Amino acid sequence: MTLAGEQTTDEKPEMAPERPREEQPQPPSLEAKKPTRRRPSRRGKRKKRTRAETAAGWLTSKFGRIGGVLFTPKKTFEEIAANPDYFGVVFITVAAMLATVGAHYILWATKMNFFDVDLHKYVSQPFPYGYYVLSEGFSFGVWYLTRNFLIYYFMSWALGGERDAGLLLLCTGYSLGTQLVGRLLQAFVFYAVFPPVTYQVSTETSIMLLAGSVQQLLVHQEAWAGITAFNQDVSKAWQMSPTVRGFSYLTYAINAWTTVVAAAAIYTVTRLSWKRSGLIAGTVFALDTVFFAYSLM
Image 1: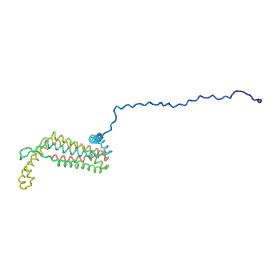
Image 2: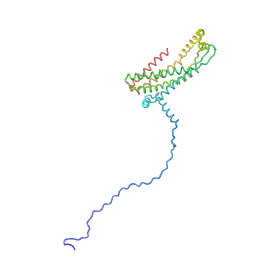
Image 3: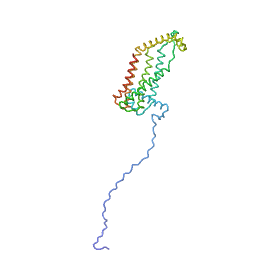
Image 4: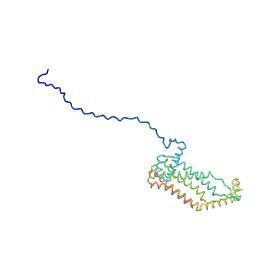
């Protein structure tokens, strides 16, 4: 039953057409990776360094510093300042002393002859190890290392440079690596180049001196004075020979090399200019020049 005015219809209300659903991106399927076998290294398994190899590497680095000071001093001194190490100084000092004693032993054994005027034959004389050890200890440890350090330190202080006594002493010791080279060269020159020399000795006079008798000393005093005068003349003539004199100039050149290396050490430690650093190092060289000129007289 319907009311009047109402219309009946079987039509359903129209609806908006449905949009196709957008497909959600699916994560890529993770396929199970097959285990791959690792190829063995062609170099083989890395070996663990032994103590000997570690020590050899450590020594190589330390000796590298000594060589670096000789040829690239500025760069090497900067490395020393960043990582101080006293091994090089100790090695240079001990090696220089041993090289000098060894060089003089070579000279004593191969070039020096001793003629006994009483026995009328050549005799052997014991090498004075103690004398040369003490002499080189004073020459290298006091004359070069201590003297140079004190001059460098006080002059850099006077010129307004930074003061670091420990580092400056360390770099001063490294700068003497040039002197080690000179002493090693000295051993070769003594053996290969130096001329032989003959000194006189007297067995009887030596015995009388050891006896301590005043009368015997007076008897042999004239003979001893004659032998001493003869040996002094021989030594002077030998030192004036061209070979020995030429080696003296070579040692002077080594001192000039030391001055250049020391200037780089002073520049690095004190932060002074190159001009002032060269002035400080040149002061030591000037002092060495005075003693060199005196030795030639």
